[in-house]
Image 1 (cartoon, rainbow, N blue to C red):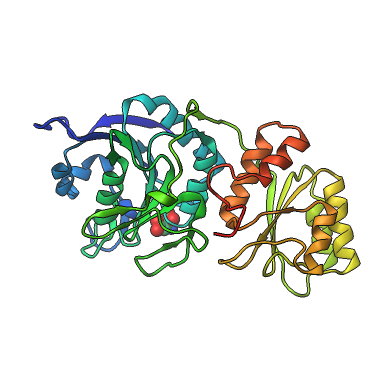
Image 2: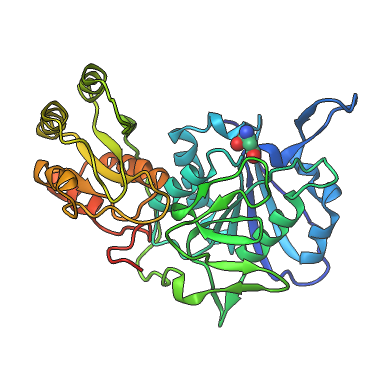
Length: 358
Ligand code: ASP
């Protein structure tokens, strides 16, 4: 990924209200029609002020770092997340906030990953994108982008209001690691079923201070390591023993997000429990996440989940699968002892879980 940083609005006449580094990775937001008018192609984001002249009225000093070749977010990898965290670290002191333009398909994963990588974050990192390309009349890109920029420079009593990684989309500001893409055709593409929105963007942007993360006191740090050998295992009735055993016996497998039923329940067939026990004994961390969007894992509530606790499976509380996969990648990437890793997986690191029901 080659990167180039440019200042977008060098001719601001008033003292800017704030400064934002826009990081453009790709996705639908940056698409326009080609000359034939029949194909959508990535647009040169350096021309964003021509396409969205309203941005000038915001009076925000804008810089842009753009992927040379914008990508569909289906192609995002853990290397991109580490790179994004490094860009934020390198530019941390120079901007009030950061806006990451990203495809919607994997935005919830990227926002979750960044939330773990950026420790003691004291500035907003706002992901946004669009369902309709910026080059189409009825695009939602303009509104999403403008609101994301406003969030990125929002302050109260001299301090930023949102010291966290979030997603601004369709008038909702959501915590990144609580979000899920739930719509591929409507504008309200993201939902956070187990946690209230951080803000509603109506006539004004109304922040809900009770649910925002507290301003951290520690020193900001961008972590640079993630473990890749993780898998999601979504249970369904009629699982084949051979398939599950092969999956869990994958060489080098470090972590499994076990997507269980309801409040964390799984089959009690001896072969299944043995396969889980053997994986735990081999040192694989298994994080139990509910297939239900709303609610939480309560291991031990039913006999069908008590077995899992007894085997050493870790309850994921009300975490999303996106936040669980990236939490495993982060925690297991840090080189901590098994005890420490387990403790961290059970802890609320960045507001991704509520240890008690809300
Ligand atoms: N496929 C696109 C992406 O995730 C969809 C979008 O941007 O909304 O990159």
